[in-house]
Image 1 (cartoon, rainbow, N blue to C red):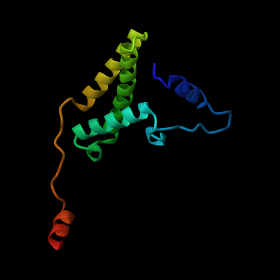
Image 2: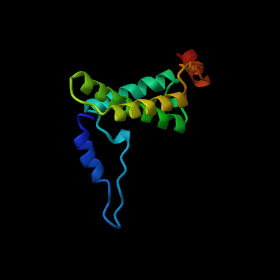
Image 3: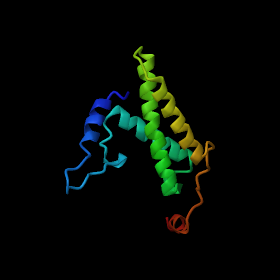
Length: 130
């Protein structure tokens, strides 16, 4: 599905650690962000977080949902591009991805939230001192 699916699949198959060794768990923050898939994921994640008032306003649970929705978004875009280029796409997988993303987005809300721009006491003091 993803252009880099073979690479991701090969890397994920190495996650199983030998007996007695620790498995290395990777996160989105571990990525170097050079691949198109990573760039699309981080761009969507930042847009979603901004629509929800900024990353700093999100709870840990909301950040996890935003990360998941952004990752699914990159996978959906890749599948759409694959389809539009004339290559076959598994419709069941595509629908599962879009449905999963819709549910995650519904969990955090589909309406934009205002960002809190109220200056802090430190901001006011710094502004007067300047």
